Image 1: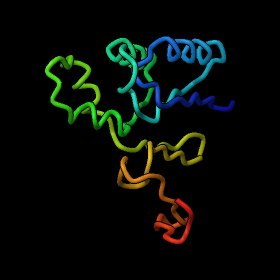
Image 2: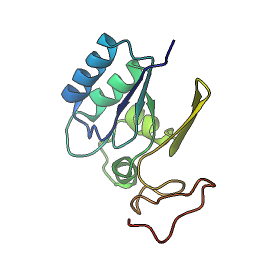
Image 3: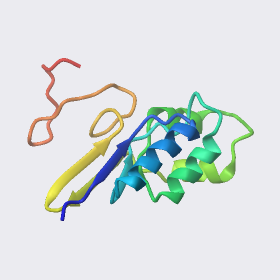
Length: 131
C-alpha cells in the first residue's frame, strides 16, 4: 500500500482555502499532510489557520513570513500562535516507504531568506546554477 502525501504551503493566515485543501485531503484519504511554511502573513485568520494545522496533524515547517511575524514587535500576538510558530523546524526530513523526503521553505539547508539554492547529490551548494 502506498502512502499518500498532501503538500501545501504559503497559506498566509487564510483559513478558508486551507480548510478546503484539508477537506480534499480527507476525501482522498491522505496519510501525511505537510505544510512547507508561511502560515503567517497577508490574511487575518492566523489563529484559525494554526488551529486547522494542529487539528489536521499537519507536519509544518517555518517560512520567511513566519520568521517576520515572530520578529515583529506587535503586542497583539496570541501566545499559543506564537508558541506554535516558535516550535516549528526549518526543515522536515522524513523516510517514507524507504524513500527520503526533505522539505524546506526556501533555501536548503540553512536559510529562509536567501532564495532557493540548488544542491548536488552530496548536499554541496551548486554555485554556478541559476538562482
